[in-house]
Length: 230
Length: 409
Ligand SMILES: Nc1ncnc2c1ncn2[C@@H]1O[C@H](COP(=O)(O)OP(=O)(O)OP(=O)(O)O)[C@@H](O)[C@H]1O
Ligand SMILES: [Mg+2]
Image 1: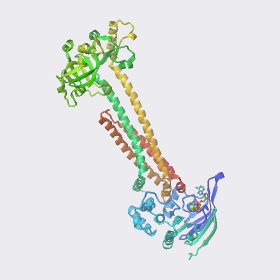
Image 2: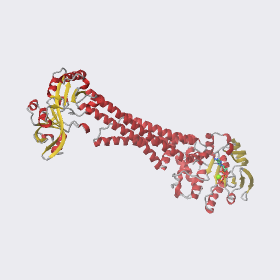
Image 3: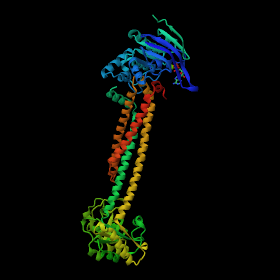
Image 4: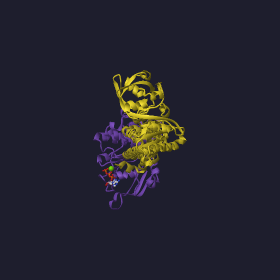
């Protein structure tokens, strides 16, 4: 469960200080599928980085499964990322000049999973992300943008994290490919019960989620349920 | 993270960036090999200079005509530059104590012909004691005898280089004995061939023709003066004393009271050795400086490659951290990468340096010798630079928070 209270994030200091998040608070229960919406520069990515333990807030508290991670050290945050969180980034997702399979196995390498088990789980994740076997040994520059996103999704779920964070996963994709990627997320949420937080600025994309949080200039302006909510 | 995984990760990272890894290794190879090759050539040059000096003979004192102008200049003042030494001077020296042997020399360069071939070489008028004093050994035939000298016989002993120059590349020393050669148009009979001394360049003692001193005076130089007198002392302890005695007796004979006005110079072999060793020392310093500079340049190259690598890969570091890598996992990976690159580059550099030294040796220019000191120094310095500059920037990058690293440009 995610519980953030009065999160602030300020970049820079003095004259050039810029407040990207101004007192953001919400709670996301396990198994929710949430979309975070907002115009460009509103602080979506900043928020996601904090939720994903990649960055720490300037002030405020963040309870992840009951632990206050806002004061965690670098090492402790690395452990949380390794065990609980999977990411799909806005860009620069895969290691260059490295095969699809190795990219997906990487989180397992850091988690200390054995070689055979590693490969089995990587292939399983690639299958559930909908990438066909023919691409496993392709390098990241030999596959399409949509395929890259699916590899990134496979990598995000290979560790079986409870929380999957995706920053504009369909940003660079055509509508049809985007739909396939979004259906993958929906399936993961429904069938495996993963908590999914997805960032987008497209309403159509947000409608795949069951809850939409909209932020603007670093503050939440709306928090509503969608038609998908059962 | 297990060590085997770190190694595997390192391997994939290095092979994913073949060009960059290759260039880094190349930088290290060049840095190390140039130092090793340079130092080996320097050591070889020093060795060849000192062995040339040893080949001159032992306990040798040389008297040459011309003014005494301090140690260094004495050597360069051309033989026969002035006409002041005579056979009776040599005889007077022969009467001194501690003299083992005396050889009178009349040397000059002349055109030499035999059966249509010709060469221009040094013709040295010498006496029977010359081989003993100057470490010359006879291969075929015999050396000049006292009676041949007294009778001004037209006989010659030639060096192995002269044999091939005059009688063709395939000529054997034995073939030359008994042949007639013409020096300055006059016929001389070859009675012997010397053993090769392997000298080279400025002091090739194989490219020489020896004739009796008196024959050289009569037929070649056309006067009764000597171009040098070589004296062998009985042992090395008496060299200085003998040098003084020779100076005194010649000053008296030439009726010169002020020794600074002497019309000859007396050179002790120890003086030659000490001035030559000061030259080789300078040479060694020079080469050490050149090697040091190439090591610094190589080191900066390595530094540059390593820093660029880390900078370029900061985003990769951020991504790795975002998916669960700890700071220590990243540091380990880059440390091992740096170690592997420097080891591969180091091994390549040592092999290449050795190869260059071997090729120089094989080409016959200089007999090189690779010193372990230079290998260890070159390898140590580049390994140190490689590891420091591969590891520390990576450690710093690994310390960044993943977002800052991912944003890095
Ligand atoms: N490292 C940083 N230093 C300074 N300012 C930053 C930094 N990162 C983000 N910002 C600022 O914070 C604000 C929010 O950035 P953020 O990346 O969260 O936007 P976003 O909502 O994800 O936008 P987009 O939809 O374009 O991705 C922006 O105005 C940006 O300029
Ligand atoms: Mg963004």
